[in-house]
Image (tube, rainbow, N blue to C red):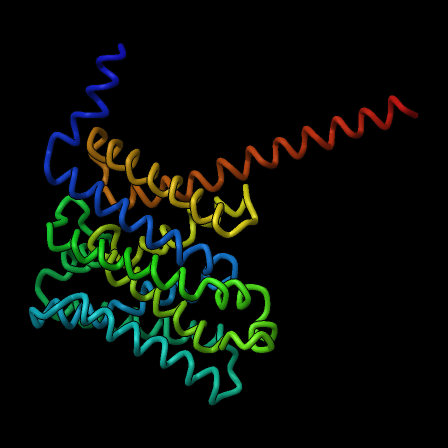
Length: 290
């Protein structure tokens, strides 16, 4: 029984492509957990989702022209960030409205561009949902660099990010340049999205940025602990997701992303059950005392 279980766990990772997928997933988890914690704390999930879709036109153009997908995605993300800033600053529209407009516009543009190719469905699926088992050594290097940059900038901007998470005005009073910190935060979100689409795709990277940090927020309010817990949850999602995908024959990226979301609702259910049990015990104690 034990030997069979060990074989089920180790068999998939006898293949190089599975080991590459595992390494890429773990590196993505490090970067997405760090920036995702700030996204969750600031309530920027919608912006994160919009950026995950906003990179699609640039990636699509680069894909068709045979250029750098990373560069195409980065340029598209820059256009998205600039457009949101301009629309919210120069009109009466709120930031959410500007994000929503660009979200739909960029996604529609990306799909329209990809549809010009004959292999429309396959190309779109690859970009949106990624190809974890097709990760190369070059992809691993890129993901590792992105993780290192995210770690460094998270340390450098820790105090501005923390102050910004509570109040932009407070960050301004403390001289922590909230506008610069905000742009740095958006830049890190874009970096993670652009460098992670090979692992989980532009559509599902949003799950990595939000689900593990949101789950971590259920069990801790301290930022460093949230980041650590988020990494553990994300890493488990990658590892178990790869195992399930290999043995069950399911699509790899959606399986991994889906498990991170399931983890959130599982922890939430456990927390609610414990809270309910505590309320019941307190109620019984009051009745007994009365």
